[in-house]
Length: 283
Ligand code: SAM
Image (cartoon, rainbow, N blue to C red; front, side):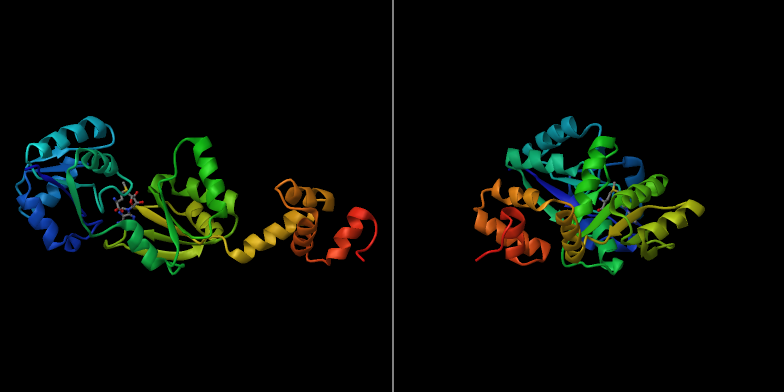
């Protein structure tokens, strides 16, 4: 019988958030794969867990995942823990999960803390529709592309950030999105937990004066549909009626339908569009 993989969520700061099921599982598996064994040993010691540990991190994830799959194929049960929170959320866990699926190994998840969900619930921003971005990429071109996509995003956006990059990221968000509501969630579940509902511009001026400390989740308000509509109106107004018509006709609309749509976009009567194109009114 092959073993199984258990994804075990661990506290993001407060040890009281460790679930009894995770403690039992970590005690009973054959091996624990941990992102940072030096960090996780403190957690295991606190709960008196003596199971052996092996490192599984960004720089060994591919070979180590193969090794761990081999162990499970030989009948060993393996638990995966990340540095903090839920494995496979902004950590290398997904590679191991994929390889287990390919090898037919059963994977189960023991839910618990995740910084993104904790922050979302505290943000005061819409939690009905949200998207998780994790860390923004360090590659400049890729980052610019993602920021441009996020500028148009209408769902609430969750971003992870380390303190030494916070100011730069706030600056980049301000440059791309302009002024928006944002909630900065810092040191969640810890003694100095802080939730700061503010705007991107205000957060930027605050952290230009004050050194950021601790780990942050940035919860950014999505672009409202009203804002999108206003921008669309402005962009139509900057086009000639001919270019506006061509936009639709080249997209496959017939002239009549395009005229109707152009009139709607510009908030004018259809006859005005007809007159602009044909130099006369509709009869
Ligand atoms: N797997 C984790 C989870 O489930 O949230 C995330 C790991 S990711 C490598 C680390 C990032 O999560 C930090 O840089 C920070 O953005 C966020 N984070 C983790 N713990 C946090 C906390 N207590 N308060 C605020 N943000 C936290």
